[in-house]
Image (tube, rainbow, N blue to C red; front, side, top):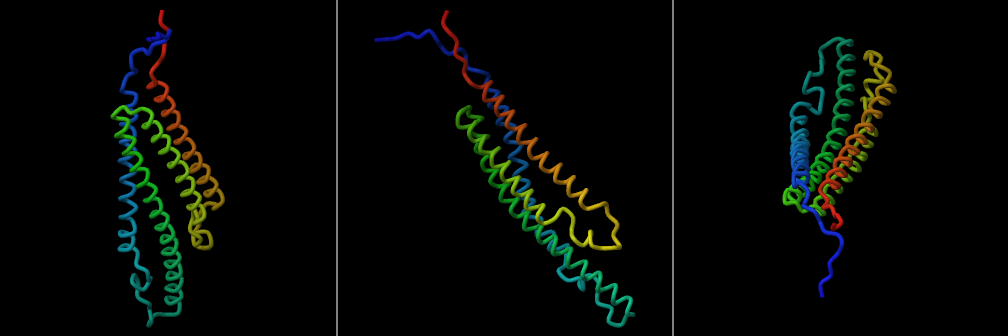
Length: 206
């Protein structure tokens, strides 16, 4: 027995809503791949540019005056603190590289699925990408603030004049968290728009 309903689906929505989102995800994925490559290359480059010991840059003036020796010691302490700060940053960059690699993988999957117009799975993958991007970004930014926006030696040195560190840190926090929330809110808005526009409509039969 056949039953007829008073409702029937209209023509399918434009496939370019899903394909457009696929293109956006492909672009974002490319940036994530570049981020992963940068995270791998940065430690190698810095290891070559930053010697561990200040003596590799300037030999100790064993035959110099007391003033020259004192100046060398100060520079050596400054250099050790600089290297320690960048070592902490390199560790953070490594974690950021892993985060970017995960985003690149999920982004690639979502790009393929969306381009094939598999709407439900594609929307879920993009939603997962946004969640990973936001949560991972929040953790990374928190770790960055724990290391320090400004190296300690710049705030403790009497010879280096800088703006009040608290102002710089507060400004960095405001910009960082604001950017994180704004960008992911924008991604969510785009996802919601595509989800609504790509959903088949149902109309009643006249």
